[in-house]
Image 1 (cartoon, one colour):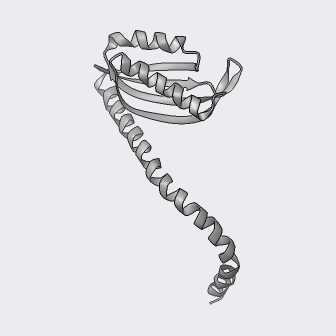
Image 2 (spheres, one colour):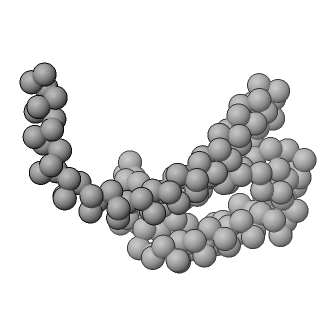
Image 3 (cartoon, helix red, strand yellow):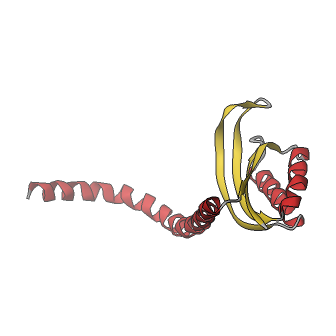
Length: 151
């Protein structure tokens, strides 16, 4: 089993649900061929360096996985058939130095996947309170701040 990374660019004309369904289909292609997904990293909607099929933007998604080298040809064949993808690239991590870099990237992707989930949950709960409170407190806090500055 070798370590691989796939960067795929999905068409930007899809809705969020369609993009997620396309990403699930990509992951299913990998797992159905005997691959084990280590981590994924959604990079989001980005501007392309040049237009591809009249699209100037694309949804970037990275998948880190381990798989037997013989299965890569089938995965790439299915990616070429998939019309939802604008482009894809498969990167093989073979040498010890590359494997070390791969492990670092996987750990970074796992931490990034865990961190937003923890940060977003409290932010959503506190955001409405924080937005309402400054409007009412802005008038009372402004004089207090100037009095504190005068002392």
